[in-house]
Each structure stands twice: as structure tokens, then as C-alpha cells.
Image 1 (cartoon, rainbow, N blue to C red):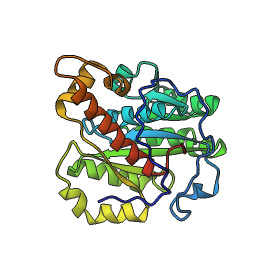
Image 2 (cartoon, helix red, strand yellow):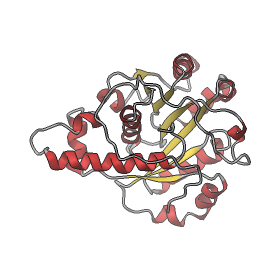
Image 3 (cartoon, one colour):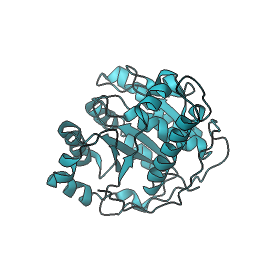
Length: 280
């Protein structure tokens, strides 16, 4: 099942290997097309977005989604700040070493470290891609409340977006339902079905969740699966996706490079279909 209710941007099949931080100017004014009854931000200007890769449990594919989304900005030469907020499993920064580090915590002192995300976006006037840690729900909620982040974001023409990765398993879907119910009228979501997992029966047959997705007009996209050997090599060798397109090694040649290129092409088309990324 794929639900896409936002304005689509034109998809491109270019998977450039240029691994820069997007010094060329992008489209600073990003069209916000969320239905006003669902998200009141429809009537305000959105210049930049903070994209949170979430899933609220470990092992669902948050860092894979985060790295792929970050690579989209690099390949499309769109200015972006990368943020590693999963300090216990920093797979994002372990591969994209230029990204900054922030931290969410229920401890007030440590939780203030998440402020660096918004400060950086406002100072640089650009978008950000953030890799959230597992079980971040309460720390994230407290951060929004204690620093009135949503009001601050509105005042600075910034929109927060949650890209919520799900596996099709019951606990993963329950976390999605809680996040949608708690945040979606203030923070739009994108449901990301990680196709590494093959059983979507619970997802398709969850009447309450499907009704909530329809009610909130939440896009549902699919994150394609990389062959296990290819994905393992990328992670083990600490390769950016751009690097993997030219990497040669034992068991990794032109066929594996082509698999990465195909993966990026499909993932980018899915990302662009949501309407949450800058126009190219």
C-alpha cells in the first residue's frame, strides 16, 4: 500500500558521486502543501526543513534511511547539515565523518545538546538530516516542550519532518501509531517501509493504523532493499553511497556498484514523491 497525498516533485535518475556538502544554492523556498485541516503550517512559508530519521527502536533501518536521504542532498547539490544524534550507535557519522553531533536525553542538562540542531539550521539557513537514536520518544517530546521548538521553528520558517521507518512487525507499527497520534498535527510524518523486511500483513491489516495514516494524509513510501552482501560491504568498509559507486574489492565489482546505483535511483524517486524535499 502506498499513500502519497503531497505534491510530487519531478524525479531524477541521476546518482552523482559528488560527495560535497552542497555549496551550490538550492531552492530556499520549499512549497508546503500539507492540508490545512491536518497541519496548520500550510498557511506559513517554509524555507527549510529538519528531517528526522526515526523508528523508535534499534535495528529497523534508521541509519540506512538517514544516510540515503543525506546522500540525496549531496547528489542533488542541495545545501544540508548532517547530524548524528545516535551517540551509542553512530553509524551515520562513522561513514559521513563531516556531520555534526547532537544528543537527546531526558536529563535536562544533556538534553540541551539537541539545541545545536536548530541553532545550526537557523545560522546556516539550510536544511538538516538527523539520525535519531532508538527509544527517543520521551526525550524528543521533552525537548519540543522545554524549548518551545515548534514555535521557534515557525518563527524561522522551518518545518520539522519525521521519516518513520517501520519493519511490519507489531511493536514497530505500534511505535509509529504513537508517534502519529502524538506529533503529526504539529510534525508531519513520512512512513518508510523498509523492504529488508518482507511480511507486511500486520501493516496492511491494521485498521486503526491505516485509518490514522489516511486521516493525517501521511505519505507511505518504500525503502528498497540492498543485497545483503552489498549492504554489509558498504557498512564494513565505511563507504558513503557515493564511494560505493566506485569501490572495487573482493566480491565487490561492477555488478555490486550497479546494485547500489539502482537502490539509490529507487530510493530517491520515493523521497521526491513526498513533496518534502527541495525542488530540483
